[in-house]
Image (cartoon, rainbow, N blue to C red; front, side, top):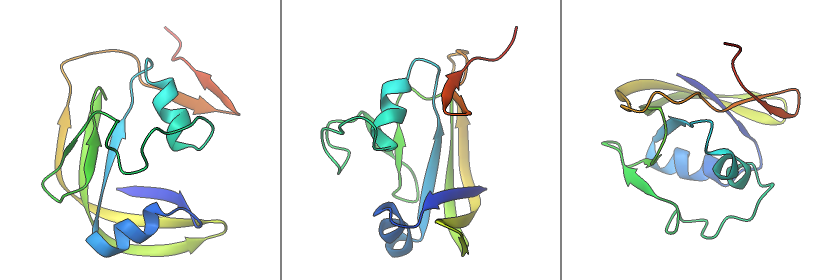
Length: 115
């Protein structure tokens, strides 16, 4: 799995220290949560305390209410302009029973899949 994280993000230090990261595919109803993690809405607690989550096998947090998740062990990281590219080996994954539309962000707007 590949993830691109802004090079100034404190998340990179946590990933480097733990050697793991997790990805949650958000549902279309989780726009506010996406805005919090993008830094465009206030996050109540940077340590995930007030954000519903659980801990994956690697120790990485998985956000509740998502459509799917991937738990990864960090394999390599590369500079990519103003981002760092993380490459992880998926050690566990899952899909929620909920079949809501995924949260999509393109051209500075949230979008929906065409039906």
